[in-house]
Image 1 (cartoon, rainbow, N blue to C red):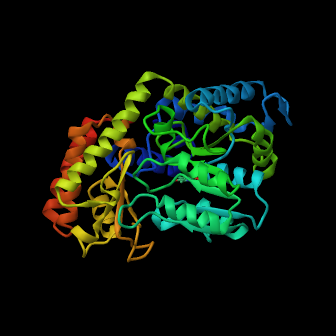
Image 2: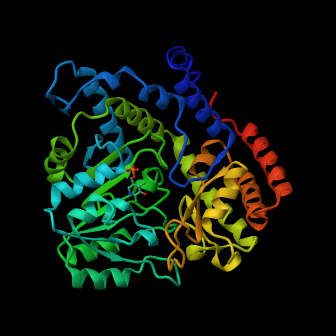
Image 3: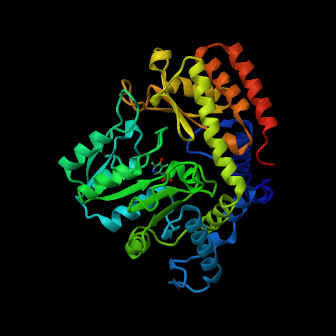
Length: 415
Ligand SMILES: *Cc1c(COP(=O)(O)O)cnc(C)c1O
């Protein structure tokens, strides 16, 4: 976008918006939770619907003038149902965290018990962290990944579930490179009479096309973000069986939100429509193939990966063996200097801290959107290696930075 109109009204904001567009164009986004939406989604998200109050649901709004809002929300819902095969869909949550909040509010009382994966092992703040409302409202116990294999410790999960007797078990993760045994977790949930919430925030797109196994129809509730592996713009979504539909809908509105962000729901409708096209299935396959290629190439260069590889869109590098003197933060900062943007991440059995952890998390959704395939991704792995092996070498940095410029010019993004 050119931001000409913003510039005429507000040059300071226009400058920052244009600079952000350029930053996205000129860097390689490898933050596993990020992606780039189409121009069509961008336009829908910046529509006049930002002006519209539409509290309630289609056909039963608390305001007049909602006929177009109704049409758009219904399109988003129908398309989501088709994409994920869900019975009931709520597209109003402002983001993934609010989607989880909707489920907790619908099914739990304050003080009820949540069993979830520990944050340092790949969980999410909204699964019961003390700094989040979930940790402050509910009684939380954690399960873990096996520190030797990097895979979920399903036996440990089962044992803890029987001891703790949770009201809800949360699956679905932020930094977990492997497929999830949804049915196994569902069996545990049923055995201890708990609900099962599968939070597919990271893998919504992969699940939608069947490139990743799906918890829909297995778990009681499935929540997601709409801006990670699916390119539908910033937002959240809840899916469930018809029997929970009313509870979920009223927990979202009026339970925890006011007017829905109808302009974002328009973005979701457009993005879900795009995701139903065959090209999107090809895209998600390429995301996974690219992550495998990235992981293999990094391993060739001596890096060790948590769990030894990946089944999805991300790899989690544990720097402790290959680069014992280098922290994830140092790697992140040096890579950002050359235009490769990713994030430091804790690893299972973390021996440093959450602020300066021992790993880096690297995802392929955004580069795949730009058209990167295996060969180019392997070259990016080579560039990452050169930087992490030579953190303070300015010649290496300037060399890699030049190559990043060439790659971003070759794989174009926004006009
Ligand atoms: C990203 C993420 C969320 C949602 O985050 P928002 O920023 O609120 O959209 C929820 N759960 C998991 C596991 C995530 O990775």
